[in-house]
Amino acid sequence: MNSNQETDAWSRRKFMKAVVSSSALAVMGQFGIFRLAMASQADKTGLTMIVVDYAKCTGCRTCETACSAANHKQTVNGETLNGLGNPETANIRVYPYNPDVDVPNVCAMCPDNPCIEACPVDPDPKTGFKALFRHPETRAVTNDPNRCITCGSCADACRTGTIIPNDDTGLPEHMCTLCNGDPQCVKHCPFGALTHVSVDLDRDFYAMKPDQIAGKLIQKWYGKSH
Ligand code: SF4
Ligand code: SF4
Ligand code: SF4
Image 1 (tube, protein in one colour):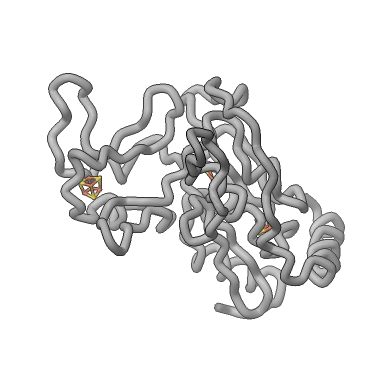
Image 2 (cartoon, rainbow, N blue to C red):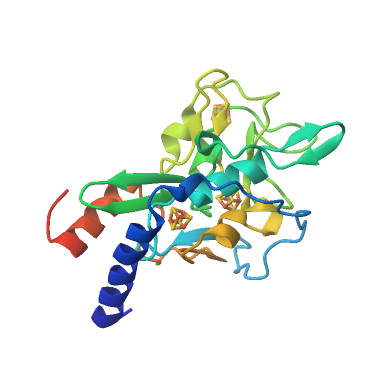
């Protein structure tokens, strides 16, 4: 993106933010049946992830609602339906900063798996999986609540600060599932700020924590240190 494009994108962001205001938690419709196939953009590592165009993000938090609704379903009279979309349970979490910068945070799908490496639970003799493992089909970092000892080591090791233990159970949460290859956050972001792409370690802002990203954006957009 050149400087003119950046200026245009930033202007659009400011304009859209003013328009959207607080309509963030719009009721989400039915998302349909999840696809089991992996995304087509898998790179040689076979890993894909969600990336953010921060210049387009307005902080509307629709992604949180879409993610939570899709990943925390409810069963009503035997029928499986999308959940209520509580943003607190989402796997993508939007961090707001002042001056105005919004940083959606989501798993970076690190190929070297620092969270899994940090898990002290021995691999299961049958499956070879620790209490945290990369799911062989979805490729998402996945927790086995029956083997997890809730030590918090995975959260401590997470580069992006995405993994957060549940306050009540201590189980690690907020690992992106990629929605079985059909990312709902990407589909429902009203501003096209999210994209499902192959993991690229050289990508700007890759595997950084929200504070680090915000610091760079505030410097770039406002000429201030954070
Ligand atoms: S990524 Fe999209 S849906 Fe999420 S807060 Fe930003 S603009 Fe809204
Ligand atoms: S909290 Fe559970 S999954 Fe995470 S490192 Fe500890 S035992 Fe492993
Ligand atoms: S891909 Fe799915 S699980 Fe991952 S952040 Fe987006 S909506 Fe949530």
